[in-house]
Length: 255
Ligand code: MG
Ligand code: MG
Image 1 (cartoon, rainbow, N blue to C red):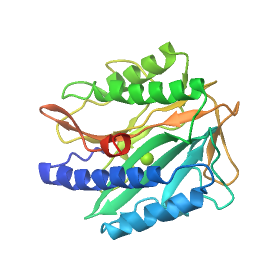
Image 2: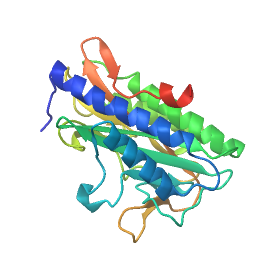
Image 3: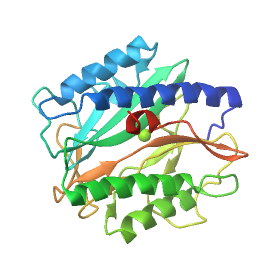
Image 4: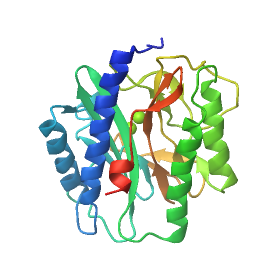
């Protein structure tokens, strides 16, 4: 069942997703060679609590931390660790969630650690562009498949591949609501976009093949060929005026 949100509920979702954006910006300031992913997790948890929210991922289905941090070939759901030290040239996807006033925030950003290889930089750029291509399809009367197709087309025409096993989702009083928002699919298919729908669009794009492996830690998803994978995520509301993006990357990119 799809829960459509009132304008007031959308404002609460905006508050959460703006806090997630600010948390990602705060974490981004500390991403450099030598930092451990567990240190980044602690920074995020403190920042979220200092702003009156609770980390949305902590304890979610038993997840042990506040951030999912996925380095290089890790696609998503990486568990922060004091043994994982970031190195110059790494690429790191940071996924963050909050809960405040009964609603969730959920957004992700992929950071470069120092200077990354040109093909990795291009993967990051194309994945972010694919997210924006998806957002551009958000309007009343379009369908989920229009978003999915725009993301897939942009990734594949640039020579990259789309992860199929994990998808975007509705967002609200639950972190994962209907409908699913795949990053692949056919135009004109899937649920209709109606006013009040709030979804997370989150392309996971691989440099090599699309296939992934679920690690035995029960969480981490990595590419089968161990080539890098990038991930960006926005929460977006469907309004009668079009897409209302509840997340912002401005605080990350204009720091
Ligand atoms: Mg997320
Ligand atoms: Mg999500």
